Image 1: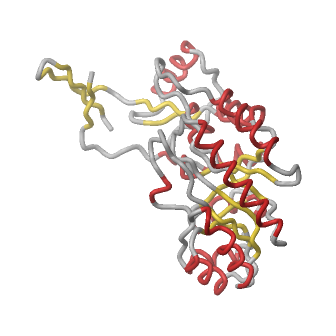
Image 2 (image 1 turned 60 degrees about the vertical axis):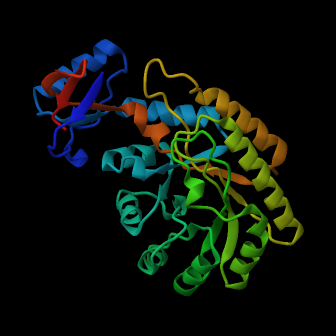
Amino acid sequence: MRRENVPTPAPDLLASPKLSRSKPDVSGVENLIRAMLKKHRTPFMLIRRGLLERQFQRFRKCLPEVTPYYAIKANPHPKIIKTFIKLGAGFDVASASEMKLVLALGAAREKIIFANTVKSAEDIITARRRQVPMMTFDNEPELYKISEHYPGAQVLLRIKVGNEGSVVNLSLKFGADPEDAHLILRKARSLGLVPTGLSFHVGSQSKNVENYLQALEISAQILNQAKEHDLPLKIMDIGGGFPIQHFDNEIGVNFERMALQIRKQIRQLFDKKVQFIAEPGRLLVGPAGILVTQVIGRTFRSNKNYYYLNL
């Protein structure tokens, strides 16, 4: 069955109903939707706070060594951000506007990573003025820009890693070649910056755990080399891309099993003093959302039903 959209405006998430604490059982969800339909016109989105909390605790249970920095591009609703602040999350921001948003809502500046490897001078200046020191980079020209506008910033080098099987291959656009890592990190230090760690991203909705395992192995080698050359790195950012199940019959998605292998790799390859962070987005908020819409038309052509929604 195929669905096509009609050209009507998408709902404003910030104007959507309050976060709900309803249970995720089917009858409870249906009752919640019916109750909200009495107050709001479709289309609208419901975000269940209870599931936000559950997904956060799920992540912490599966990867207790890794601090989650919520990637707010997944859903920047203020109440979602406030929920994760209360739970102790850090935040991955990609722009000055996202940075200002999480700070205004009460996030601690030391728990924010400016995870955009190519930033405008204005955004770097904003980071300096807001005293958000930790940011990523993946090329030498970016280092000159950061050193000019934020001397002493803490920088994490993003390296290129395998993205096989991911829905979106981010290594096509981002990441330094691992063999160049040591030279680039030394360059960062020579420019008055503080090389603090490494980061990688295995791609969006990555079901292939080998991407993570190979990336961790490469990263461990770089950290060991840096330590041997008096350039100790203390933070390892394993990015996001953790998959969720989009359909009831979807196979190959098992975060618990994936996390178990990642934990094993971390314990085997890294010094206990290395601090691990991650940038989950979809994993934390995807299961909590319910988009409520209406079928406003149906037609039958080419031996198929076509349904039209008010989105």
